[in-house]
Image (cartoon, rainbow, N blue to C red):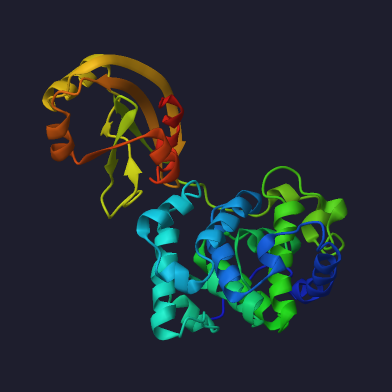
Length: 364
């Protein structure tokens, strides 16, 4: 790996390892997480994938539910796609679940059902990048590899008052190089990565004032010494999210609601959705849609507006609940690839992304 220069006080890094490990081991009972209680390779892998873009407290119920459905890699490799997506519903970033299954199939076919242990092998699996590979390799297999995520970037940037953009790949690479010579092996390798995670999640916070008086690195942290904690880390301004208007249609016959399956590629690929259209449709637009699709409305009701934020786009949502006459429904179902599902089936069988969940409460 090519060396990258880090400005600031890089010599401090070697001094933070011991107090950070001591602190982590001393507070192990205060942040109990189920994947730490039984850190098998499968459990570690699953938790690391779930923790991407998701807070640990939010992950816990999904983690338990997932393991109850797919207790091991063999079960995951053989997962029914609909069951898999339903199990993942609510966590978002659904490609993570699809990649879990793909990786499980590779593991069954090429590694006799055992998760591989090297960084290179792990990174070759679908859905596993460098950070996740290092986290798994250190926690599950004791390899001395830093797992550099936002927590590590924030902690190190404050400790050495580094003003480099933490969103730049070269900064992440440089911080990894900076940590690598100091990483222990065995259980302490995983403990150190988890110590960084916990410190960033509970003390060295990204928003608001960090709790420096409780930090095991306070005496070594230059940002704390100079009172400049809020100036770090530095990152380039995020690009403004694209905003899209969409209109959600709750097409209802009796107690059943129309669902449509999204394409297998692109945003929310392969998931179920309520029929929806680009733009903010008013009542006349909705009636035009119904006429075009040969559907007859018995009752049309405007629903409250809602908003859903993805990583790269924001949907501004308008909703309409439409009670349909049964005439023409068979033709519409075939033409528009609708299925009709009861509220119970939507709750228990079909995976509806959170973007559409704003309107589930209006189903009766």
